[in-house]
Length: 134
Image (cartoon, helix red, strand yellow):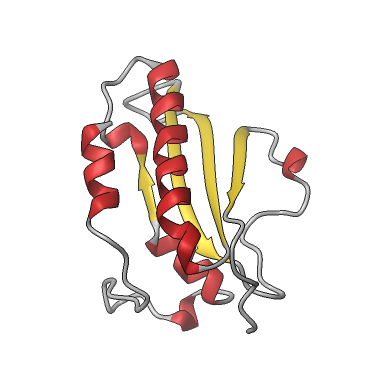
C-alpha cells in the first residue's frame, strides 16, 4: 500500500498532461478521456497470487482518492475486479481503480452495475460540489 499511497501524495492536475497522442477526438466525451488517463492497475503494485490483498489494496487506494478529491468537487471513483485469461497467465485477477469528474450527461459506467456480469464493481462518490456542466 505504501507505493499506492505515495501515488496519491503527488497531487493532481486539472489539465491533461497525458501523452499528446491521446486527444478528446478519440473518446466519446471528456469523461471517457479522463477515465483512460486517470486509472491504475493495482496488480502492478501488489504481489501476484493474493486476491484478498489485491481487493483490499484497490479499496484502500480508492478511499484515499476519495479523501483527496473530496475538496475539489464531485467525482466518481470506480474500482473493478475481473478474472482475466491471458495466454501466459490463465485466471489472472486484475483490479483497476479510475476516477472522473461528475459531469451532467456523461457517465463512464452503465447505469445498472448489475450488467457487468464478469466484473465486481464498486463506485465511490465524493459528496462535495455539484456536477460540472458539459
